[in-house]
Amino acid sequence: MEPKIPYKIYLEESEIPQAWYNVRADMKNKPAPLLNPGTLQPMTIDELKGVFCEELCRQELDNDTAYFPIPEEILNFYKMYRPAPLVRAYFLEKALGTPAKIYYKFEGNNTSGSHKLNSAIAQAYYAKKQGLKGVTTETGAGQWGTALSMACSYFGLDCQVFMVKCSYEQKPFRREVMRTYGANVTPSPSTKTEVGKKILAEYPDTTGSLGCAISEAVEAAVTQPGYRYVLGSVLNQVLLHQSIIGLEAKAALDKYGIKPDIIIGCAGGGSNLGGLISPFMGEKLRGEADYRIIAVEPASCPSFTRGKYAYDFCDTGEICPLAKMYTLGSQFMPSASHAGGLRYHGMSSILSQLYYDGLMEARSVEQTAVFEAAELFARVEGTLPAPESSHAIRAAIDEALKCKETGEEKTILFGLTGTGYFDLKAYEQFNDKTMTDVIPTDEQIAASLAKLPKVE
Ligand SMILES: *Cc1c(COP(=O)(O)O)cnc(C)c1O
Image (cartoon, rainbow, N blue to C red; front, side, top):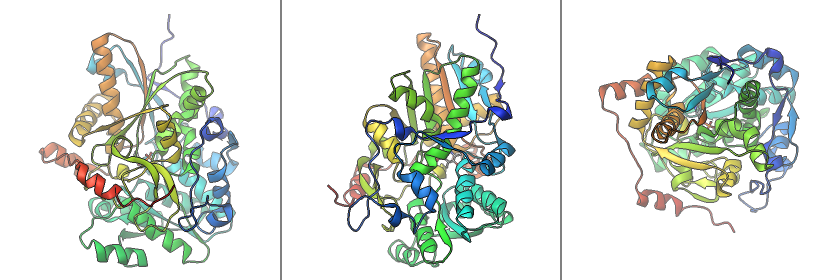
């Protein structure tokens, strides 16, 4: 007899993983290095450390060390909101009438409301340790800026946030949370930076994009002494910190001898998905186990499913290093979709390489279908999910419904990355039935891809 699985599987505080896992150590084909946009040579620590904190540069470039011990100050902070629960979605299974067993790892149990705090606290810690005055960053939907402002206030660092303009206007409440934690928030593009002025001159009506806010934040970091830039997704170091999600999930599943068949996560820049799948992918890469892994992205910003695997700029202003990734082109401006946190033109280099090597799948889903899944989930499981997270819910439901047809009792694990309390404008449109699905045309994507930098 299978042991009865509790509704929530909690780890003891003493069972919180003590080291992050670096999946690159087990990848045969390493992710392609960041390139200096001028010389097209791999970026060195010396080049990176003018922009990023030094210890984070080391983590960024380290493709070989499998485990990084988590410093005690970070573990202490983690204890405020971790371990995060792993929940068996009994009520969702029942509502779907599926034989599938569905689990989700819930990362929304902190004031910032998402998994981003896992990396924010790490990045703020290394900035403080280096003796910096403050950090600059961009935020899309606002979750990263909120997480970073919490982390900076904990360590007494100044926090300057460039917030994608459409989110700044749609989500005034997030802005106020950031300000309450002491952050300085500017809508992007802004006239505070040269690159912001340039983008505004070219696209005066733009509602902004993550790529554009990144350019502004990087410029702000390199032009102020004692400041460095921090990024909430995409980078290798961020996936490393987010491995805490997967390590905890795996430890909780292992307690009951549960092995997932399918692992699903939403993919913006790839940090939550990369973190969730890390230890499972490690087993897969070492030939110890096999899992189906599915990245879910919005049809409005489909980097994996319609983008190209190529070197591209990480930002619209083309001042950041080049990363090899699935990209829609750094000049791609997604429609003002509500899944703000998924509006990035590119994708983590680690996940891009894994996808290219056939080790994971990707699919895109349309916004209204995502909110239908969100609504069902909220009604039966009680938690109001973030629109980003609801992409993963959509795919988990679709897989569970396939099991209903075939009668297979698959075990599905998905990442519930956050709560939707600040996304009520989007829920309002869904409830009013005014929500639309804006999907870029092939011509739009081709036009943006035509502007990729020429590297080979
Ligand atoms: C930022 C965010 C995402 C997407 O970012 P990734 O780096 O792809 O994980 C997903 N869900 C929530 C709630 C977010 O805040």
